[in-house]
Length: 326
Image (tube, rainbow, N blue to C red):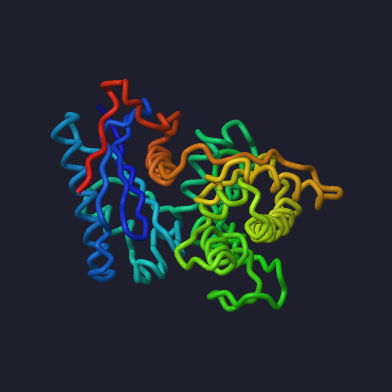
């Protein structure tokens, strides 16, 4: 069966799949990045993992993959196929597309992890059917993917969508980017974890604990949570004023709080809009599979075959493979 390689590289681990022309997942696997051994080892691990997937396809599906898509974190020059910088992986200016093309002998597409995840959410996830969407995952930091007619806008220099560095509290908390008061210093999962740990006096408390305390009516938790929601609403209203999306998709760890987040967030955004059209504000649908599914779409775009992808394995379906880890 003709298929492509989909590979999503994270800070500590990699998720991959072989995706058939019909969108079915033929094989799934995970590997560690090996970042503790340095950036060269990470690049080597990516190349080796891709080669394993290529060989697996040839052995089990009659022929090797015909293309590959890879999503990586940090600053990505998608046009030139270069992984420019990733603080958590330690690399700079890695010609990843060229290295993979040489190793595999097939066309390779390189994408930014959040934009690639946004591509999947827009085409086959929570934004399916929306001509304009904004995908904002709330994790360790905050980024964004701007969706326009089935594609994601990278910007002139590959920096489009960096909503986490919109200043929402001028003169506020310093950010590693060099500014003060950036959105991600107030509304990311890590920022909420830090604020709640301080407020409750438990250094091990995190954002999930805060959400649980909010649901139970803890006034300190409600205060911490509302401060984060207000900052997030300020940033999102700036974004929707500029972009006018039809759908606003919120993902990442903080979104796992469900209506504990979405009900006050929708209220806060609604209170701030004046002339702007209020978009649908919805939770992401694909979870941590979005990057891998999006990488598969990038690969299939190279071939002009980017139709639907099965978004999750079905444990009752014998054609859906178990995930292999190592």
